[in-house]
Length: 256
Image (cartoon, rainbow, N blue to C red; front, top):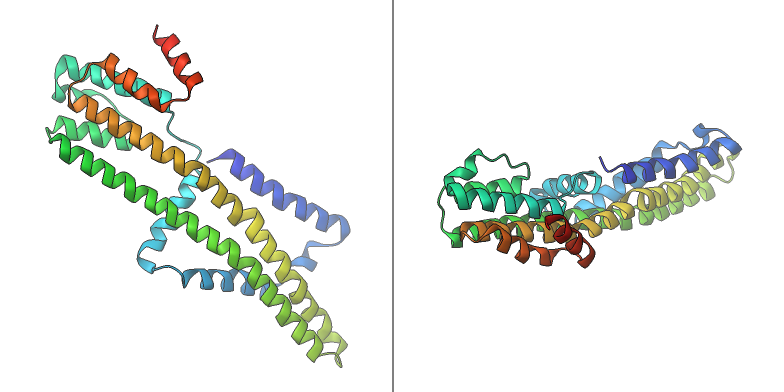
C-alpha cells in the first residue's frame, strides 16, 4: 500500500469530519438521496463513456498502481540484469533458470531467453505487453478523471433538485429542511469525491505512468542485451543511460 496516498485521503476526510463534529453532529451531514445522486449518477454517467469489456481491468490496474507502494527501482534492476548477464555468459541461457527473479516482466524475459526464442519474438512480445499495460493504466486514469469531472456536476444537479423540492414545498415547513439538505449536501459530496479521491488518483497515476514505461523499457533493453550475449559491463554501461546523472554517478562509484 502506498502510505502517502492512504495518509492523504484519511487526513482529508479526517479534517472534514473533525470540522463537522466541532460544529454539530455527523448525522446532520449524512443524506442517502444526496449519496445516490452524486455516487450513483457520477458512476452511471462515467460508464456511458466506456465499454464494459475493458473498464474492469482498467479500474483495477489503475487502482493497484495508484495505491501500490512497491515500484521498480531502476538501480536495483540494472544490478539484477547485470547479474543475469554474468550468469548467462558463464553458464549459458539454461543457467538463467536457476536464478530467482522477482520482477514478473524481467522473469518473463529471462524465461524467453532460457527457452531459446528468437530476439525478434522476444522484443515484440515484451513491447506488446508493455504497451497494453500502459494502455490499461491510461484507461484507468481516464476513468477516474471522468468520475472526478462527473461528481461535482451531479453535486450541482442534486442542488438544483433540492432547490426545486424546497420551492415546491414552501407551504409545508417540515419539507423544507430535507429538501435543503439535498441541495447543500450533494454539492459537498461531489466536491469531496472529486478532490479527495478522483483527482489525487489521477495525479498519482500520471506520475507513475512515465516511471512504469521507463522501467519496462529498461527491462526490455536489458533482456535483449542478455539474449545477444553482451558482456555484463557493457550492458551496465548501456543501461546507465536510463538513470539520472546523480544516480548514475553513485552506481558507477559503487561498482568501482
